[in-house]
Amino acid sequence: MYSCIRIFELFISFRLMSIQEQHREHRRRTLRGPLLIFGTVMTIIYLSLGVLLLAKRDFFADIPIEFRNIFAVLLLVYGLYRGWRVYWDYYRN
Image 1 (cartoon, helix red, strand yellow):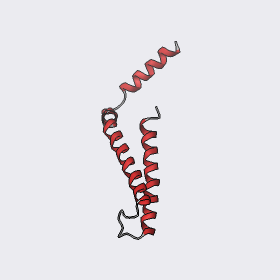
Image 2 (cartoon, rainbow, N blue to C red):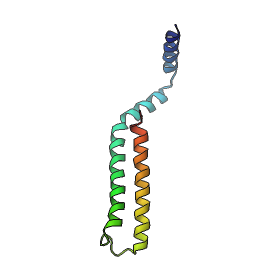
Image 3 (tube, helix red, strand yellow):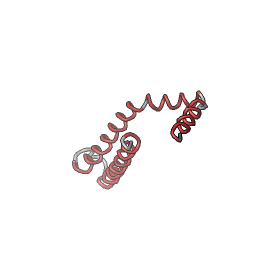
Image 4 (cartoon, rainbow, N blue to C red):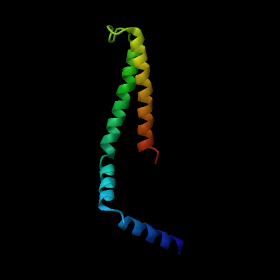
């Protein structure tokens, strides 16, 4: 009995969802795949550029070493953050 009432409530709440909310939900589902790919690629780019700046001293050799190291650490931290966000948004379910 409870499940029939709950199903009816869900049906009514879905029917009462505005067209704008339905469009927003549809757009979110449609963009899920490309945004997942873009987020993953950008995470890899940030992490690899940070590691490259720390590991290879001749990569961007005209920039002072202190600034390169600071920028590399920032890229690594931001890459980890982006990776965590991609995981949280797409793989937690």
